[in-house]
Length: 341
View 1: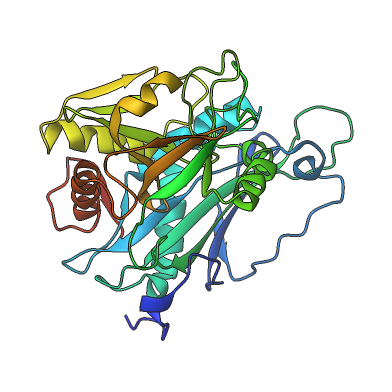
View 2: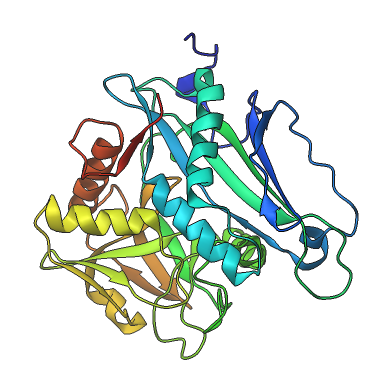
């Protein structure tokens, strides 16, 4: 199979239209079998539920070319399960997990020429999403839905290496207790846009959101979970019912304990503790780990000993180990790597 003639080494992290995408429709109480299409355009009624009441959820994962030449994805079963939970919370019909996995297989295979070669630093980003499609004017769930998957080749999230970023503690709240912070709903990301634009205008790369109830505990950013490394080498991740259960974060916790022999603590993390950590980072599908060098709390700087020049040593080991597993350089735990072709 011949690869597309793309400048793989210089791809940005953006949308490149590929040839095939997957579409399935929910109508009369059931999902159809789904199909591949070349049509990248979605045509909906002006009163569709997704437009009126933001009834939409999505996922994000990647396909990789491994060292031995296979095309694989990383733990797609967890994406399938998380999408089920997201759909239930917004009163949308859950897509069967087996159909989710099949849709990923079909789209990646159909666009295999767009999967970047091993060693290029690029990957194929996969975006499954679901939305309410029939006209809804009263405040209620839609009756009909569309599930789609498209893929796009993307370059490394960080060009020239992952340099530590500076973030600020936000005055905005990301999610309310008992709200929708734990699911991957489009509405969560829409409400974070003003906060991230404001942070960028003030010279910061991201926001740190605190819990809305007490504003004393660390939650996450607009699109990533936090990880912290203590001065005695433990890995600590914030625990909250309003944090999205990041697949990358859960994987890093396993890697820390079982591959690197670290003690791992998943618990409430208080803002007052931040000054005591040795390293900090954000974790998610796009970058795997984004190192944090400094947090600014309304003018007060919290600088981590790992500094602003490079990723901290423990965070780097976590990053190297997880990406090694994803790319096939390091043996993966059973079930983590899903081979497509």
